[in-house]
Image (cartoon, rainbow, N blue to C red):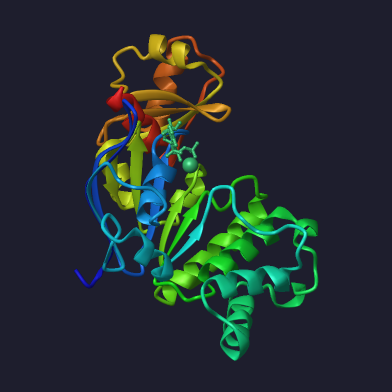
Length: 308
Ligand SMILES: Nc1ncnc2c1ncn2[C@@H]1O[C@H](COP(=O)(O)OP(=O)(O)OP(=O)(O)O)[C@@H](O)[C@H]1O
Ligand SMILES: [Mg+2]
């Protein structure tokens, strides 16, 4: 058990007749970046709030950093960091004042506080910002400050509930560099996101579908399991046109993907050139077919579809 940061077994949470989290079981290893994905309302925040001791479970077991959160929800708060979905910085206070406030909430004062503030400010690259009013900072910096406040007391695990929602791509990339840095220093990261490119940075990914954990594995294994075969990008035709023009091509899937289509065929099987040739012979003169990478978005669409 000591190498586990989180152990969840048959966890269920009901709100009246509605089951927000259904019989969920998983473990997270120490130092792991664990991504928790799912559509709006899938039960991600509900799970996190239970693991952070903020919401009672209806059924099941949950242990975080060795603390039984079902029986001792208050004890868990000292050993975790938590960045809530609507996070809790005081916008009218300076960066320094926010750090002091959150440090104080965890019993960090005086020299102990200053040492941690300086270490975290350096690690998360906030050092120059002490006097700035928090509300005047761009979103990406605010998010970094919220992360700093969540890890001031050096928790072994930090729960980040959509930490990069609404932040620009450059700031998101920066934020993930910092998350990786924290993980490399041994902090376990439990993070939710709607950005599939961010999910690629996770060591393992759990996919929640309407309260159930529908899949859990490394990004690479999820792709092999749920989206096997060769992925092709098709431009210049609609999904319907491709299906009709397939003429014996073994199509495993045809999905819109940005402005193009993701079309999946068996491997070994027809190459991109062969598929393009067939579609053209069937009258799709302007079609262009190229090899494409399988993404976690493809996985997500497949899992959600199989579930429905
Ligand atoms: N206190 C509550 N009372 C009743 N229903 C609730 C309560 N909290 C959450 N729910 C419901 O439980 C479901 C799961 O909510 P949750 O916030 O866990 O989803 P989520 O995966 O975090 O979604 P999002 O991506 O939108 O943040 C939703 O249908 C939500 O409306
Ligand atoms: Mg949520």
